[in-house]
Length: 159
Image 1 (cartoon, rainbow, N blue to C red):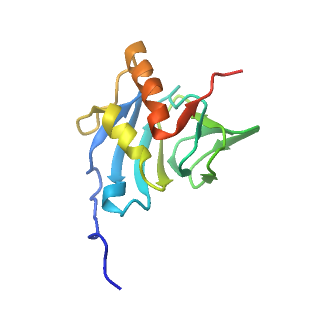
Image 2 (cartoon, rainbow, N blue to C red; image 1 turned 90 degrees about the horizontal axis):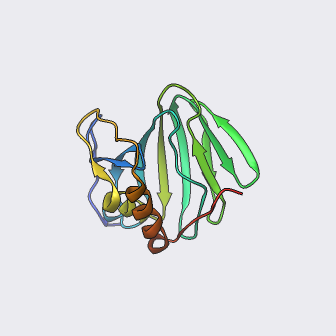
């Protein structure tokens, strides 16, 4: 058996860090580096942070909580996830998450197959080491909403 791509090692704190809608994402591995199999991102979600309700038509997402607490809503289910909690969301599930605490939360999430990380890299703002993104502007929110269909994502207005 031959390798299709080289191994990748990302030391602690390395990898491109970007701000997306007020959250900090550090891209650990992209689809280009995994033969399209998956991508992995470390996310820091500030108090009040998290994406709007949405549905993916292309990839499953897995979330593993490292620090803090995030409230996930998956279809009609509400889960308060703390350190050590893992969630796997199938394609087509309506979901979102929010940090409802006063402390940042940190998690790893994977996307399989890869591709969604390109949305983050395309629309995110580069961040310096340890820097958190600013509160998103209306223009930034609109740019992300307009880009989502290209990545197979439907934003679902709250009911």
